[in-house]
Figure 1: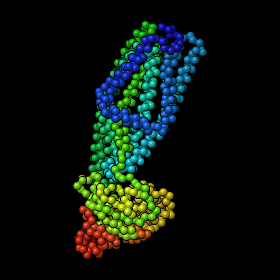
Figure 2: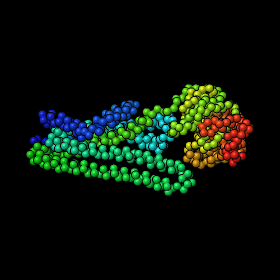
Figure 3: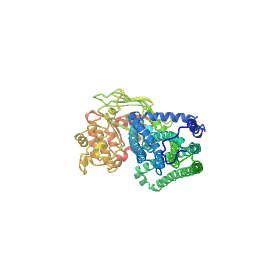
Figure 4: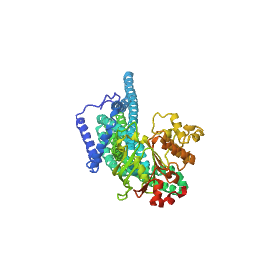
Length: 626
């Protein structure tokens, strides 16, 4: 053995090391194969192939940040190299403390230690900063792409998927995807490279202690594999519960007026407490599994430490190991174990996130179940609308429950057509099809002789404006809601539309006028004011076709008259869905629809003279508004 007072200059070449290195690598491969994937459910099943494909696809989203990643991994490897030699130089300095070396040699050893320590801090900091920047860029791209994809889906998609889970996928799941791939890849590469370098140095220090260290790996691998199997299902359940709780809270808070109207606060509190109890049960079970796993892992680690201390005592007593080299080995040994644990943890965390990645990709890959928009955007539009044998069934309804049955009707430019009939007769379905929220299964709807889907969506929704009975407003100012979806809309244009809708006076009376905040979903406005804003929002687009779906029911008589006068001007095509007799009587053409079919049509006088369905249901439909 070398004199302990002499500086240690590195591992002594030994032929046995040529065999120990490959044997250790082979042991690691066997442990990885048998300990982690030996159950056949993960490695050999279709799930692993699918997981591998998903992860490879996830990596492709990093392509725009290739240069950033090259720089980050370069700094990572440099930092790992510096980290690896810190304990070795610390042992050298310790062995020189009681020796009689020259001051220059001691300062040189301290300088080496300081240099690698400084390099470790510098390179690690640069690596971490670049990785976090890359992760932020990835999350931004994925969220933008997912949100864009969701916005392209048909309305039925949002009827099947509630806002809460979709919002959770968009934010929580995308963030988790980025962390899993970016941070776990970072940790995996760092730990793997560091483990290889440390293993080489540790074999040179003491191959006996190194073998004891490597025994810890298969034991931890088997234990980790069992823990992954148990915890994966719990993590999926917890993610689902989190989305459900968020959706439940969002629905209750968003519908607080309805909750308060029915005095259902206690029922909603009970439902939310039940959801929290379910989440608590899953978290408690997960905590128990985690506690047992940590206890078993630390128990194994403690046993290995005791064996290592006994072996180290024998090596020191036989002069085969110095104190400084033993200190160096122990400084390597704990990070070595941590690196192995980190590799196993990254593997398990990546597997547990495969379900999240798969769900997000399923949204990204989903093709909207609606016809693609066309390229038509003519400068002049007459506004003649024709329903040709339109048959329609809602996607969520049974096939035998038809909303519209071979409906044929025509809306003439410059005339007002009233669509009347009992509730559930098909009026709303006609409006929904005109708005292209759904597509008819049979027949077609023509606008100036062209199917609706031949027009550009932006153009169509600007030229065909809809004002509903309960308009939806967004948080922001009145002007923002009026200009919603328009570009370069001047305030003069907004004010002109407000005057036409007889709403400029009430807006001018507000403190901030058109910059007044309407609150969440327009909560600061009355129902009549909401309808007024919705009418202005339609008129500011200068549409050729206007659909008033009970849109003036909350306005006063003067405002109703002003609105009808304006929408009938300029030769517009007007479709009114109304329950007010006075409004219907003024229509140029009345279409009575019941059970999804057109029963009668004509003017008010013609239908009254027929004494048919329109006549018999007149009192029921209109008497309260006569």
